[in-house]
Length: 252
Image (cartoon, rainbow, N blue to C red; front, side, top):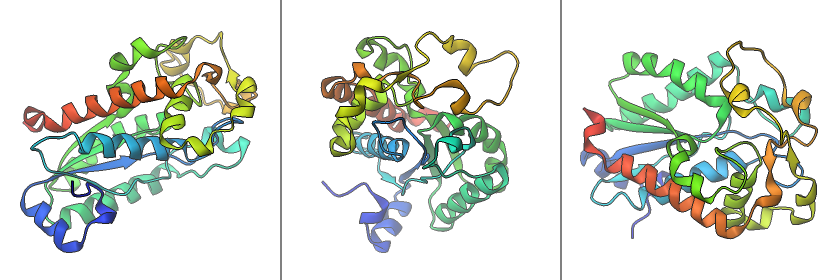
């Protein structure tokens, strides 16, 4: 099977894909702390891995996965160290520059696949501008939200993806097992009694850095993580995203 990754193709390959109206998947993620047991590249590794797996399952829909934008909106993690962040104007400008590059190469359709909770609000706010400022047809989604229902049967304590948690840790055990510090898993939990609905969808907004909410930098319980769960979570995420890529009605 030919590679689906932009960076592994030649310019000629990519011109042919554009001429064939291939869908470009643009993964966007983050570089931020993920507790004592996971590397700071979790969101980038997982989002890129899910996008690659989904593109390989897209069937007769030609797909190319652009390089992952590894920096996003992560001010809330800065106090822990190890984190890069954009401000809103910079993030918007970088994303728009990526999209305009894709547009100039003759592609028409882009699926922006987000892998970081801190990017969700910004992406939703940017989409109308990107539709107006480019000729591209653009879809935007967050892979773990898209696949939440499909992942739930494999979650032991959680009902959604949290942070450096059972789900993310399990998936890292599959996609980057050498980076997981198993000896630190006993301390990799936090905010176990939190009202997660209030945390993720507050009626009254207030900025709070993670340092004020969780001593470990973790929300959830990574002690529940296993490689077997990670394989199930990855399968659910890849198949759900692949279904979107195969859905021709999504573009109408």
